[in-house]
Image (tube, rainbow, N blue to C red; front, side):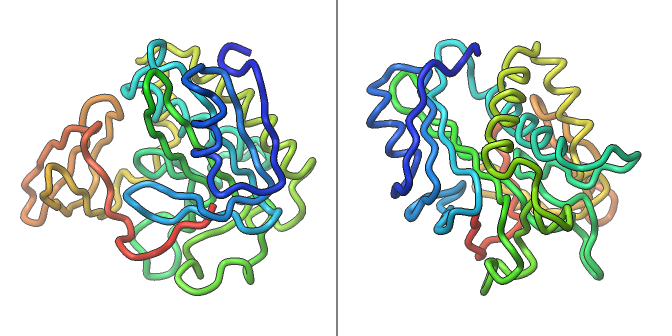
Length: 258
């Protein structure tokens, strides 16, 4: 394994990000995982909790001198997508996809919606010194009742999408995630970008993005994950946003539970 050389497993932590930061002490190669995460956090200041023993909550200490932010978010998203996808039967249509930059979601459109469906997994990347703290969460065993309040209709688990228990449970998901991340981190940037694009599920949908403090809404015409996002605004005007500094405003209020 090219990026993990030690593992710490906990029953419960506040945040795997914080525990990994403290235990790693600036040395990459550590994986921290916990059955429960009570004070996790997500992108853009959202809460990212795993209060029950029903999902994967893991943080990897990644060498920032070896991998950079032009590669790591794409590799993490691709690996998480492929790990989840591996539990579905092979078919011509992907049951799940990637929502910019690395949320794994249902690749379906609920009645009346203009965007893909419920969130299954997500990624958070933070930096401390010479390491990135790569946090990945996957919903595995949750049932609909576990996603109450603002999460209702916005989050799902592997069990829910499969219609049965995930073979091998959370341990199998974590093992597959590690394997896929190892492979993704070895890809050349262009190959990684091409693979990411095959999993994208936003092209053709109407979305709002934020870039440089300005929000832009339009139909997504193209996403080149290392370079740009092309939107077609009302009236047919196309704008090109720099991908690495542009965030999707898919939901400004909901709490994400992973």
